Image (cartoon, rainbow, N blue to C red; front, side, top):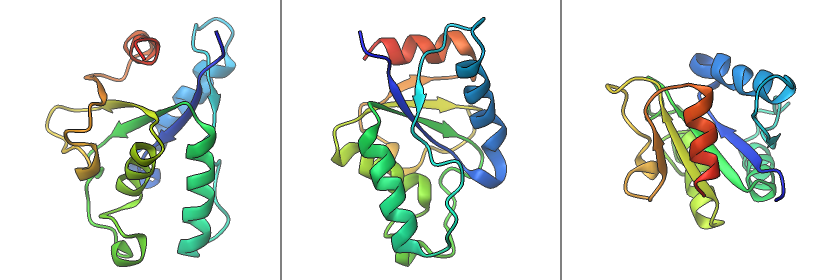
Length: 141
């Protein structure tokens, strides 16, 4: 079976430590976490069309999208009118749905609101950030 290609959707300002943990699991041979991370490390542009193009390409290359649902996952972004969605995470989930990707939602806290685009989309739900549950959700697809 081919190794899953994972795109991680997360709020860079608040939840990047979770993204870095996923990368460490992938790099550490002691963990059974097999993915090729398709998230851009950092997009070197503030140009909205450029950011959208890079994110769209990376999501297209992925087989799965793991959405880190943190405290600010549904917060209104200052550039929401240009993005076309409430924020970048909503854009990423909408693009993943459009492309028919497998979506896994990892809710960091039960009080955190899901991104609008993630609601009622059939995503696999994980209710804590831990290795075994995330791997299990990816395998269930």
